[in-house]
Amino acid sequence: MSTQRLLIPFIATILVTTACGSATSGEEPRAVPSDKITLAWQTIGGETMNQQAKSIQEPFTAKTGVKFDNVSSPTYISQLQTMVEAGKTIWDVVHTGSYLANAYCGTLFEKVDTSRMPATLVPEGTTTECSVPGIKFASEFAYDTTAYKGTVPTKVADFFDTKTFPGKRVIYTNPKGTLEVALVADGVPPDKLYPLDVERALRKLDTVKSDIIFAPSYTALQQNLVSKQATMTLTTGNRLSIINDSGGTMAPVWDFTSWDYANWLIPKGAPHAKAAEDAIVFALEPAQLIKYAAMSGDAPVRTDVDPNTIPYSESAKLFNPFLTSGSGTMVRQDNKFWAENVAEVTKKWTAWQVG
Figure 1 (cartoon, rainbow, N blue to C red):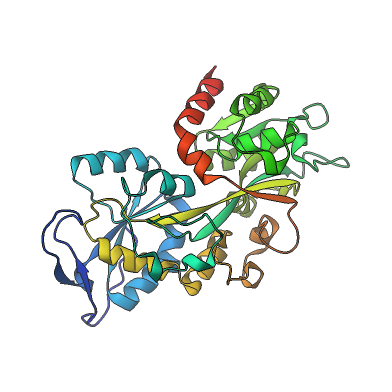
Figure 2: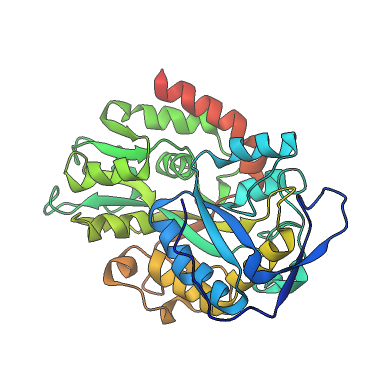
């Protein structure tokens, strides 16, 4: 799937050095005119793809002549692993979460020159040799305002109180963010969450399992809330903004919120690794991050960019915990824990979900 490719009326004079074939082919690099390069850029698709095209790719094309071919792939890690193991990587940039950057730096992802990136302007522990984070997002608890009148949910424990707050709860089929909420609701102090007690979290979730709808995609989760099939959810703030813009009537519960961040990484053996790094450096500049944040409802990780100055829509402001309006207790998800334990946690989660 490709975004619109911008045509420029002149031949770009900037040359980007890139290797023939893969970045690890061992061949001597040669200079390729930047307007002859097309970067294969992976995202999960949907609005994310369109937002990155508008805020990052089109300006970079206008500046350098480098074009983009967007790839929508929700199962990108397994695909990337197959490519790398076969020595046939065809992607140049992958958009992914923090724990995968930690888990696969140097094996599935290329190391980069982080001195070109704002590595000193992000929270400690968020960088790797392969990445500097770009955008942060939150996992939030929200409810349908038309379902509850008078007494409304005010804390994450209310997600598990089906007597006071009856109705279906819809969650995405991913344990990350959900297990944290379950443990806090069960009495674990937010600053003592990690390492996660997965069995305890699942026992807590088991108390409302019959009232949970497991959505296989964010689109399905959105449909459940807009159509009023569910009255509560645990999902990302940017998704909640989209839901309300699509006819939803959701409100956030600012009690406990966990957050994570996303990276742009270069796959091992990327065909155009140098141009890909240039594009990532460009993406991490304030102008591009601000534009992307305003469109997505997320916030830049850079500490020198104040999210309160970003021109968010009203729905994005409503679900954005990074603004000064207040968002309860905020905890950053432990990317080291998730990097080391994601396979085992996912196995337990899946067994619980289908059991």
